[in-house]
Length: 118
Length: 110
Image (cartoon, rainbow over all chains, first blue to last red; front, side, top):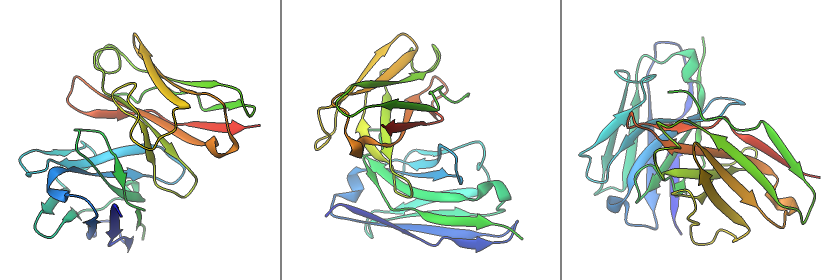
């Protein structure tokens, strides 16, 4: 079964850090471009960060540039998002999503909630 | 980069056809055939329904179709069913090498 499973979400104070992880199974992870897409409560979707299959290309939305770091380990079929200097506006469900075609999110995880609040 | 414009809501009766529009600019929808559509049920992850304007992934019903004219892309659902009631989001590649989403459309099946 094709699956992405996120973990690492939770409640953190403003200025704090959190590391999200995404475990992939059921497909050839190393062939897929991977992304983190978030959705604030009651809002739409926003692509936060992307990493190409070989990690040669990395993208960050302006809203997280300099604070978030995406990485992947193809040997472990895993994707991570290190989030530092968190702000209230980072509060959202964070989805791990992947696809062979660039910017096409064919596979999605169930999401993990990140709440930034004092 | 401004978000793509979608109607906040659309509705239709079972069996009818509905169309959801997604309006951008000549710097995104109008200039690239890289428009995707996603379906999302409340509390669930989005699901890819259409990519590259009109391509359907394996397993997606052929009742779903996509098209584009100028700066506006469209998702059409024919033979509307109760299970189609969900939120729908479009996105497009942009000339700034980014991806922009629409604000989402809530589809109600009457």
